[in-house]
Image 1 (tube, one colour):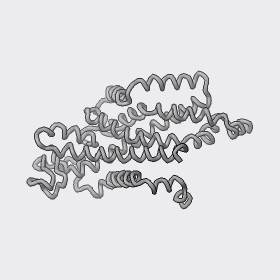
Image 2 (cartoon, helix red, strand yellow):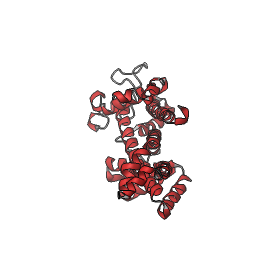
Image 3 (cartoon, helix red, strand yellow):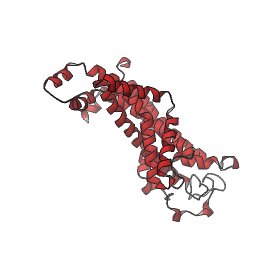
Image 4 (cartoon, helix red, strand yellow):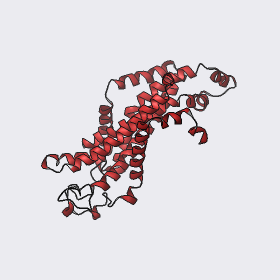
Length: 300
């Protein structure tokens, strides 16, 4: 820890107020999501605790508001503050899991394409080039639609969340594969790789034990930026009605629900979840931009 605090990366972080604010905002939202069962006044997933008589109550600071519901309630009587905490939890879960899956697929294929080369690398890169011609959200919609057609919407919330994770993972692996392939092409010609070959280590051992640690810098930058994109992708799918079900609302589902009441005056159902999504995505994106600049040797 002491070595990290004295490092150039930590010094750059302390000199960047935007990165500090972004990290604090992201940590606060993540902490609120993780501790939602402890700090949320209500469990929005528990239908027995909901009362339709409490539906569409405005925020507490308005004339008709109720101090029991500081950000108001939605059409089902859910406390919006509690729903945002639990919704952030689902959005972060889907985003982190989707990025982890995309990283696993992309890094593995990138290592194979860069180290082994030949027709295997050519096939992997051509598939990546074809996928790059389509927007990631369209790929996610296609995969999500096919998966839901196979398993059906009656598979339960966990199944639908898993489907979204797979859709996001298969939509964002290309960046990792292309980046890792380029770095692996450079690393595979260095002396330590030649020495590992001479002592008889297998290709898989060389790739994952020796080459992988030296190509992870750019991967971490891409993962940080893609986390914000994954969260927005999940919110987009849920807003379109093909994501997380309304019984277990994510931020995108809450925005979708509130959109139906926006022009009737219940603005808070959309505005507050939308603001939470914007803060979460922006803070993670700013951290990714800072990390990219901090790890860029040309900017040192």
